[in-house]
Image (tube, rainbow, N blue to C red; front, side, top):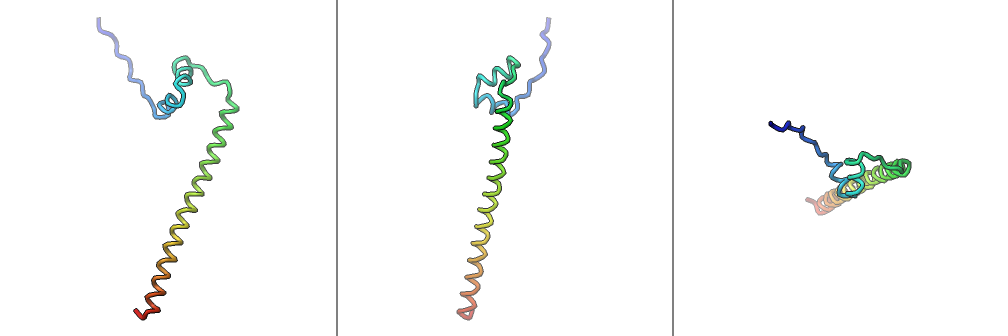
Length: 87
């Protein structure tokens, strides 16, 4: 008698990350079906990470703006030097 095929289980990247972070937590959640007891702490942690993420975006943008301004200043200095030399 043939064994019926089980549908393939999709493993998402977030699940792999959850397992790598804490295999016990993954097992309790995915295998045993238990939910975490500290939902308020988890929500606060998510909010803190989101705020930090947006701060990182702003810092990265400021860094790129700094490099762009430095490049513009170098181009302007080169243009002034060339015009001063009569080029």
